[in-house]
Length: 85
Image (cartoon, rainbow, N blue to C red):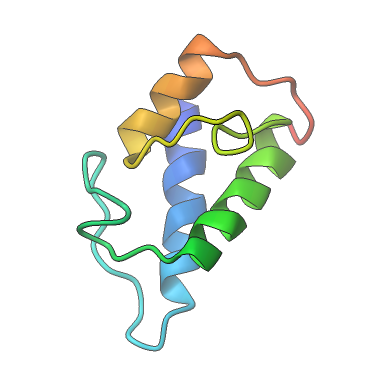
């Protein structure tokens, strides 16, 4: 699942880099909302990117992981359907 974590981290970093202040430092356990200040729009964008890659996303499934590790754990429990893979 190391590749999944990399894909997830890349999606988050891409969203963070669009901010006027640039990308914040991302660690696997960083809280997207509390530490990185993810907005609802950024969560929606992340949801769409994850669905494009994995075929589904935790947020549409009613799960709300708030870290790279938490999102990766979701995909470990609910395997990707392979939409963009």
